[in-house]
Every structure is written in structure tokens, then in C-alpha cells.
Image: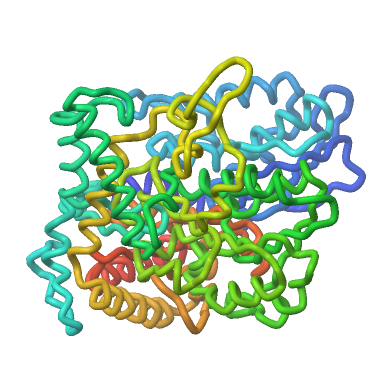
Length: 149
Length: 416
């Protein structure tokens, strides 16, 4: 099952068991709900912005290991980044998890553990839920829930 | 699970012979033999059905009811033949009570928009149950919004059965339509629809039964049930996708306005006034899925050719076996333990999200469905986000269940 181990790497299982930044920020500069109606994954993302910089980011919710680990890793990576850098990371991350599995995966540092998702097209929406939620949060600093369907 | 390894079941149902009728069951998935446990989502198709759609295109492809040439006669015979077969399958008194639809969802929308729109007034009530599939909820919400009717929902108990006391309490002279599933797609509960129909009639309501999940398992007799509408899908009962049946009581169908306008549903068209065709044709606008209907006819023939009582006994045996085996795995929780069930085992594995379990099972060739099963209210009722659902067809075996249990042990290892 080498293929499976590519997806469920120890780092991912660890973030699933003990997600980082799994808490509420109150008050938050932005609060955004994300929902995947097909599988029932739900998360709420909280952002503290200092001008254009993400000072703090946290999430709460329930979902599969992939969506939870992805949210956990994303919150780690986003701290200290500008909103524009966060948007660029969204694009790079999305490109990585939808890239051709035959080609070498782009290096995204600690986010690279999620590159295995590209072998599993049905799981792309799990890995991208937190990222879509973040994108919506910085776009209008909280609004209608986003959905990855 | 190679076909040769499968023992004939004790019930006298030759499951190995049935499996040999379904070519896809010898497919390899991720290099492993396919274990298909997702028949409530869509069933697999026997060779007879595949051949019937192929034969239609090779030997009979033409439009129906329209031309005088031989191919059109053949196509019409296949299409109308399937209607007669569906009537026999449901024990409907006459073929004119069978409307060929795109499937269950289409049938429910037809009844909601045609019957519902013509009878519902502000404050009238539509009674549903918490068990319903989204397709037996949303069409009623649409018509309720359009007419000012109100939706009432009958609760379910902790076993996943419709609360019959709550049903009796909610039925009233305001209830105009009761829409209820025969068998729950998410939990497998068989609802006591015959008595529910009798009670609804006593209250003056008309009843639509969503039979999508019942048709592949149970014998259906619309006259004995005394239902007003019964809808089903071909693809759940070993036929092609994109076709199905709406049975309707004839006086109701005759009084209902057309649902969609177009060719075949008219008898005379002028710009001053159009006269509609007879039932069931007035509900069949446009060129239908003729190849699908030809395959649907073959699926009904296939089901009629097997001993359905023995098939059901076999499926019940596999379901009971699956229930016992899954219960043995530490940390599993079965969702839906109704006293009368068929074909579905919904469950959770502690500490593992169903989606992750689904991916790991798939890597081992085991196809289950994970998620909400288009029944979000059921999930909300049990306060769970999703389940793993193993659902059975006549071709499943205890060996399939053994493979799933081995797969679930692997799932637990990954998440240990």
C-alpha cells in the first residue's frame, strides 16, 4: 500500500489527531464558515489582521483527516504572512494538489505532505476546504459560508 | 473474491450464477478484485441489460410513436413493452397508469409540480418523514414556496424508524399530501407504508411512495398498498440510468395538468389552443431515453427471471452477517437498527472520518459510499456528519463482507 502511505503520511495523521491552532479567536478580524455538503465537512476559520498582515489564524470544526490536517498546516503557514502572500499560497497550493501525478510535485515546504492528494481526485475538495475558506475570509472579512461543491 | 470461490448459499439462491450475469464484478480496482457494496447508490447491470441497450442502437434505433417505418415500430414496441413490464412489476391494473420518467427525482417533481400545484392552497400541509432522501424533500419545499403550503415532518426514533404515534398526531384534515420512502436509502429501514397509506386516506390525504430503494429488494403491489403514486428508478434495480417510473392512480393522472410541454404529449397543436394527449403520454414530452427504457425492460425481465423471495432471503442473510461482523470490530457504531431493514448497513468507526475510511477501502478494491447519502436531516437527527454505508445487491456475498471487514481492520491500522 505504498500509494496509501503517500496520502496518509504520519505528519498528516498527526495533524489530524492533534490539529494546530484548533481554537476560537474572539474577537476576530474575520470569521468565515466553510462547508463541504457532500461529505459534511465543516470548519470555521478565524483571522486576526494587523493591517495587511495575518497576525493570528485558527480554526474549529469537524471533517476528515485530510481536511483537518490541511487546515492545521495552513494555519501554521499563514501566520505572519500578508494577505497577498496568503492569496499567492492559495494559488500555489491549489496548483500542487491538482497537478499531474506523473510530474514532480512543486516544493511547498511543509505543505508538500499534502501533494499525495493529487493521486485522489475525489479528495481535492477535502484538502482545499480550509484554503477556500481562507480566501473568502480575506476577500470580504467574513460573509456567506463558502462551499467546496 | 473470485466467483468460483463462492458457495451457493444455504437458502438455495445460486449467487455464483447471478454474479456471472454481471460482467463488471470481474473488474479489477487498484489491482484488486472489485467488492461492490454501493448498490443503493446505483446497482450494477447484468449482461442482458447491457445487451438490450446495445441491441436497440444496432437494430431498432428510431424515434417512437412518430414514424411509419420498421425501425420506429421496433423502437415503439420496446418502449411500450417496457411500460407493460413495469405495470406487471408493480401489479398496476393497466399500463396507462405507468408514466416513464427520468427516474425517481423526476417522478416526484412531476407529482409536486402537476398534482401539488393544482390542489395545494395556502396553509395546506405536506407531510414528510425525517428519513427522506433530499429528492423527496426539496421538490415539496419548492411547491410549498409556490403555493403557501406548509411542510410537516414526522420524527424518527433512535432505531431509525418513523415514529408512528407522531405520524398519527400530525395527520389531519389539513394534510393534503403524504410523501414517504418505502425503504430508507441512508439506513435501510423498511417503513410500514401500507398502514401509513390507509391512515393518510382516512385523513383525506393522497400518498406518494418513493420506492427507489425498495424496487431492487421487495415485491411491490401498488393495488395492495393502495398508494396514489409510486415512483422508482431503473438504475437502482439493475437497469440503465436516466429512466424510471411514476405509477399514478388513473383518475388522478387524468385530472392532472401536464408537467412539461413538447412533442409526443399533445394530440393537436394550434396557436389558439393545444389539446393534450391521453395519459400517460401527456406527461412524456420530448424524445425520451429510448435505449435506457429498452434496458429497463430487460432489467425487469431479469428480475422476473430470478426467484425474488430466495434473492431477498439471501440478501437478508448477507445483511445480518454484515451487521454481526461490523459489530464485532471494536469502536464501530451502527446507525439505523430498525426491526425491518433491507440492503443497507450504515456505520461509523471511532476516530476515523467516513471519508478517510472510504479512500482506504477503495484502495483495497472495496466500493462503499461515505457521506450524508443525500439525507442530511437523518445525519442531523443522529448528530453525526456522515456515515460509511455498505449497501447490497442480489450479487453480494458473505465473502464481500469478509473483504470489507479486512479492509476496515486496515483502516483502523492506518489510524491507530
